[in-house]
Length: 171
Image (cartoon, rainbow, N blue to C red; front, side, top):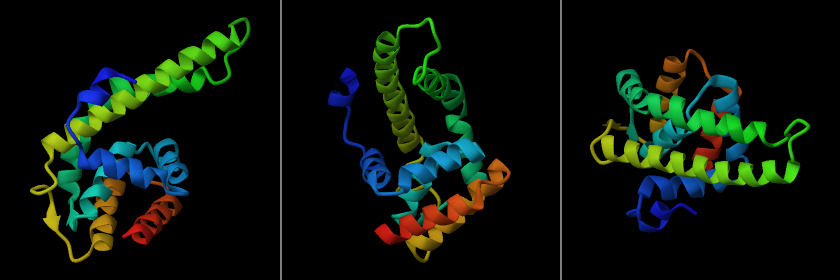
């Protein structure tokens, strides 16, 4: 595990993400949003983290959040993800065991990059002052995800609905 994982200060967002992502069905829905709609799962998780605190973001705030993560996502996270996925079934003549070991290392690096992105989001957009107060966490989640859907030009509607159900079930 990278050294910074052990020395990094606590992160409420990271803790929320680990708990929520581990819930049955969440990972699959997040991957549908990522692969089927181009969503940044860290942005989606932050919107839900804020919603759990009754805070929602409008279109402009979601656009600022997404823009703040764009370069890191495109230049670091996505290339690591692409390499990891490619190494799952390496073509001949590459050694499968060596590729599996490399895939494992890249997976650790990808997770480290995801954590850096989350820590940056949390620092740039403090939960206590980001967004506006909503009536309920469900209202906040619905409003923020609608704003992200608008920004992305349409996320898979069924996946968004399922994610909202999973979020509301945990509240």
